[in-house]
Image 1: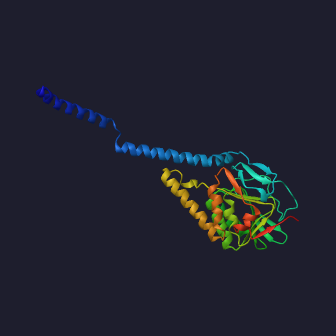
Image 2: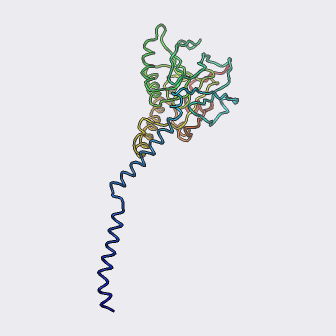
Image 3: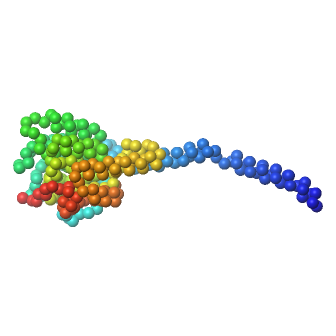
Length: 284
């Protein structure tokens, strides 16, 4: 019996080795595993990119913005639903100051127009979505304005490109201009980074400034790790921008905690608390 067991042992070892080799051959190679992980990351990054851009694509295909009129006063607002095509706004009230004629429809890029407001002089109204290239268009428009010097920049925008907004805000600060939210206007998403640039920041008590998290989609077509890193770098830039403009950076708590599909509307008390408003003007 001993000899039988001994003679069988090499066979069992050989058979076990053969089975192990078969299993190893069936396992994917390291190259295959790396490629699989890469494609998962790329697919995830693409999904993030297209989800963040879906409403923008719709707007450029011709879908118009819709306006959601709000019954409550600005000081009573907090978080509201927000998309690129549905914009919370205040009901018309002609007693609100400063008074500027605002466009009835929102463009998918910034429109520039010269306006005059008694007591504030001559300024430029920026209305519409902030798109790529708008910062350069703003600089060129300012240079070509004839007559009295520009003293302020009034805003009425649902947001858009964060980077373009920060560049415009820096241009406003460099030119020592004031920024203004007239009566019935709103400034959401990326727009507050323009508003922050004013040497003085004048708000109608009947205007809306809202913040939320931002997408930085320019670098989304890369693996998820680097996409997340890009978003973090973008958030750091917005933090530095607000700090340099003299805004209380505690506002970042609302920016980072409010998802992109919502908007956190700052009350008049918070506008002063975070040093956004240097002047609040009530109705006539």
